[in-house]
Image (tube, rainbow, N blue to C red):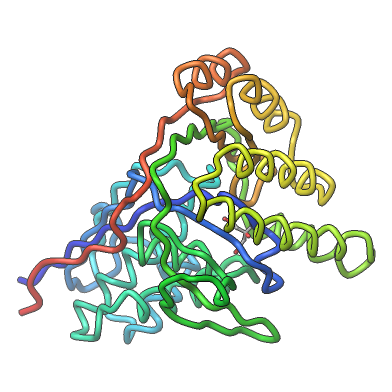
Amino acid sequence: MSEIFASAPGKFVILGEHAVVYGKPAIALAINRRFYLSVRRDDEFRINGEIVNIRANPHLMHIAGMNDMIPVSIHMDSRIPTGSGLGSSAALSVAFSAAMRALNGKSVSEEEIAKEAFEAEYFSQGGGSPMDTSASAHGRGIAVNMQERDTDKLWDISKNSHSWNISGIDAPPMKFVVGYTGIRAATGPLVEKVRKYKDSNRFAADIIDEIGQITKEGMTALGSNDVTKLGELMTEDHKLLSILGVSSNELNKLVSASLPYSYGAKLTGAGGGGSMVALTDQPDKVCDAIRSRGGMPFAVKTGADGVRVSGKNE
Ligand code: MEV
């Protein structure tokens, strides 16, 4: 019987989260923590051996719906903590889309998987951008809405009134430490919080524009391998995200503890809990500082491969 295996990486955002939802630029890097799954046809939907109501999981339900609702038995194993801001749901959507498309004999191009997974994310979160799913599908690094730069154009995605062009980037080798607060935070309500703030207050719209501006500067710093400048911009971005209301005491504590040993630090992903990231030459000291404030440090490796799919469809 045919079984398809797929895996997809998590990611962190160097600059631009939340603002990217409104078509501003962003930069995200894939990391060496992946979501693994396998699927095989079955008479009912099962997850890790248990019969499930697939409708209870909006990501899986949406992707199954785009693939003829073929019932499958899914085995999952994730190395990306859920709700950690490291793209666990995007990696799940990308891996499941790849596996279901392969099972259905459809194309498993990064672009088609990124687009299908984005639809599932958008549907489940009630909004958002294609950054996380594109980063997970392509791997390595992506820049969003930086087409005027010398980047490797991948694909365009639009939804409602926003459009995003996605390019691949190869970031120079840099050391990042991620600090997880241990607090799970769902992305949808945080995206909604920012949307309400933006719709009711011109000041929030200005902050979003400013995040877009510093992200463009960050792209220049990344291109010239200027870690000092990139770090300053990350710390500045954290302040702007805090003004938007998506930081938390725990995130601020981990950012402050990391700064003495870092070029810069900021929350990464949706915020609210989840994780922060520091750019540093002293990863051990940053890990100790994060641990001493109750956080869980991960020394992450960037440059991870994007979606992988293998197995037979007989
Ligand atoms: C979450 O990783 C990134 C956000 O910008 C949401 C999104 O882009 O969909 C907060």
